[in-house]
Length: 147
Image (cartoon, rainbow, N blue to C red; front, side):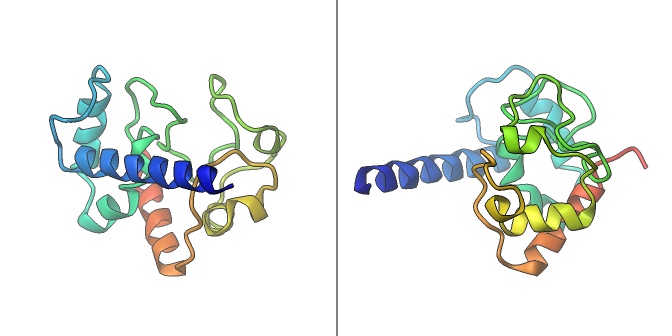
């Protein structure tokens, strides 16, 4: 048990380092084709509060309307979108069986406690306990659309 906690902490640290390097536009980021340039253009157009709110998300999710996929489905247009919409992604059974769309209330509940909202999810997201932080993330996600 202790070694799995250590491994989890090590992975979390690695994710944070990658996120900080990416957000800073570091050349230390691994070459992923034009993913970084496509998304960094969109990321840099966000207002500061949206930029800060999505910093953790962009490690895995694309936030631009087009461009190559990342390790998780794009967040472009996610608010109001059908759940488990990316045909190429291997969603958990729990999420793949969900119906409906990602409303702001659903996103809020998912961010607050992914496992409670969707038992059996494979999402590796830490709970976002602060309601104000969740509101900022949702506001930023709402900006990711053509509307």
